[in-house]
Length: 447
Image 1 (cartoon, helix red, strand yellow):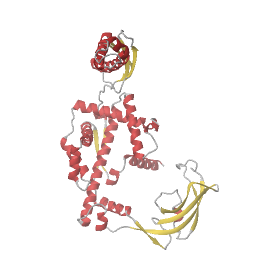
Image 2: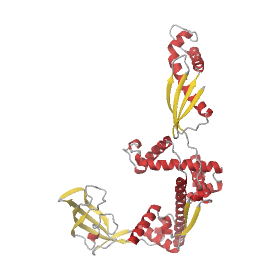
Image 3: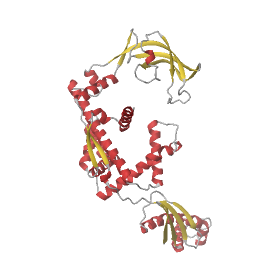
């Protein structure tokens, strides 16, 4: 077998493979002999059909099968011979298929990049330190109470946080518009769910009142046809209801699965959940900075085939997440996912190289600890732990997460790490929200 390899560009390779005609013909003959032993042809007894008849009737299909199989097997022989590591399936183009001549084909494919890991000491990580205080716990209890607010009708004028039941009709340039009319809809004043001015304009209204609101849609409104336009809303108030927070009692605790221990037991359960959320948030933000640092210090070529496969996975996830029953994944534009796919593939290759060079294996104790922490959120954690260890695929996912955490620890040992004490609220806040608030603060300072 003759093999030659040409670098087209970057990671792309063109490999030409030549197979001696003798190998093809020998395999075809074997195939035809097997066929002759069992073929049924009119006018001949089974096993007595002349080879000339067998070759005439089955020769073409036998050769086609053999060529396909030989191309497949010889491709893997060739990449092993040339020490190539393909990233994705090859594109195969036969050059010579004529009977009696050597088989020749060209396989075009990408290879995995060779990664020379960058200097981890150039990575900067701000590792946050935080704890759940009594004030944080009290605030969380109030949040839980507000999430379970009920409303009772009152005869007074509406105030912020009241829930109003209203009818409204909106008009732009005297004409009603789609989505601008509702009957018996509930509006909580101060919630910010309606356009600016709508909720404020109903403060002071009473049941039975009719109110006209002259408002303007925001310039960045999602419906571009209404963005920035003046609108008039005629609103009829049917009822005004005041919020009533539930008492911290056994009935309230039971809603959260706490059936014993009273207020102390409930506080303990809430604090455990807050501690778990805090640990995950700190871990997640540290990991994000490490991964950003790895991308910045390791500029690698990414195989297009791997990016394409990752885009397909992200498309499927998007359809599943948003419940697009009438949308097929392939209908979503690839451009929407390209940047995220490139990031995932790049990090996957870099992390795999760190694992390889440092011979990292999932720590069994950490795997067990993570499984137990996940299980602690359920009513019967022992059963959940047992389920994970009986489910090979689910356990493999946990091992993968632990492996990534161990990679993060490996990088942190050499990275420039500074510790920063922050509040619980800031620690669990998404990084994007913190960045936005920081930007707003800097903007205010500039003014």
